[in-house]
Length: 442
Ligand code: NAD
Ligand code: G6P
Ligand code: MN
Image (cartoon, rainbow, N blue to C red; front, top):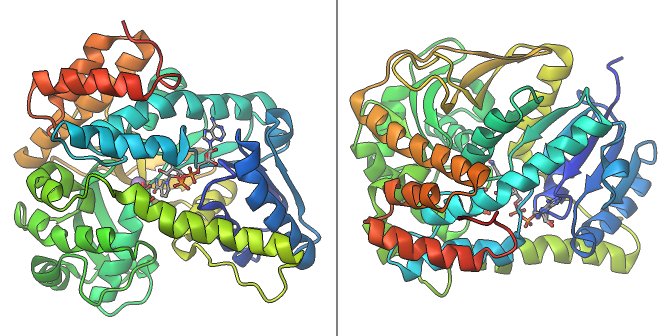
């Protein structure tokens, strides 16, 4: 019998928590749990989700200990895995990340461009705090982090907590693999093998085969060149209109380099003009999320609380999030399975900064990760990545040093910002908007 695990979800009040817990409960046969904890620093927000899950777990899995707490000691003691999904500042600050840049004629997105850099300056401290709690109360545990902006958070932990047991991972490529599987008539993304390189939200698939090694790229390219990742293709998440637009636009992103299949997020760097034309500055993605996912998830939980039972209720599983279970199993049981992770390059892309946090396939086992070499990358991608990784490193330097100058440089260097003048005006506005969340910059 496999050993039973104890996990804590950090950011327990997240809109993703019920789906993640649902997915964990659906996988108990291969990842047995003895304890599930939620930890958040917003008691009221987490309480709604905590109370509902408490009712549900008591009815369906009384053998699993369940607590939700805002006390770090209670949250992080006796855990094997920390699943981290913080959003420092919540949707109120996501609103600013998306809307402040628009006022300056730049794209407004939660992880790309100025909004992503602003979010990064807030996230670093939050994620370090969680990591430190884990190391204090459960030093043997692993943290699986998908708090955004993952690229900047990963660079910060590389620099400031180099020996920590943290693995940074993103789910976008998984959704894309799910879609590519659909394009070739397969059901599950796990039926594909892949090669990929880039930075987080900034990368390219170079190979897709089935498990027998048959090349699926020609068929996938044919679909993507006409329809992007859209048009009758299934999805494991992301059904709202703005996402459909992003998946469709991938066909134009693909056109830049027909040798590879791009990550959807590259649209913000290649087609900011298109993105701007298709953005309503009064109603951005955060509004769509608040009116949709946030309302649904909290309504669902409140309903369980009001009825006092979860009888007949079905949690909408975050089925695509099984990669989190797979990753935890790989660490616990040394499976050496392949995952796309955000790790220090260290030669895996030989013609790229060895200290850059890149997104590449790795094998995962008990002692951590082994990189899979991706070889030399072409000039186009190398140029783009050098610029973007410098932006991300400069943000972390700005945070560490409290440097206004470096944050100005980071914004100026971002391909989404047209000039140093705009960068400075933006920076001054972002400082104002993020009061109390950013370190003081001098
Ligand atoms: P959300 O605002 O609903 O949830 C975030 C929660 O984090 C809130 O309850 C908030 O109170 C809590 N929080 C903030 N700062 C904290 C701190 N210092 N300590 C403890 N808790 C804290 O946001 P969401 O939309 O559900 O997203 C959650 C996170 O997951 C975001 O970072 C999002 O970008 C990320 N995410 C990442 C991926 C990926 O692939 N990498 C996929 C989905 C979501
Ligand atoms: C993708 C990305 C995540 C991001 C999410 C945003 O899954 O990989 O990093 O957090 O999209 O989704 P949302 O529905 O909140 O806009
Ligand atoms: Mn992501």
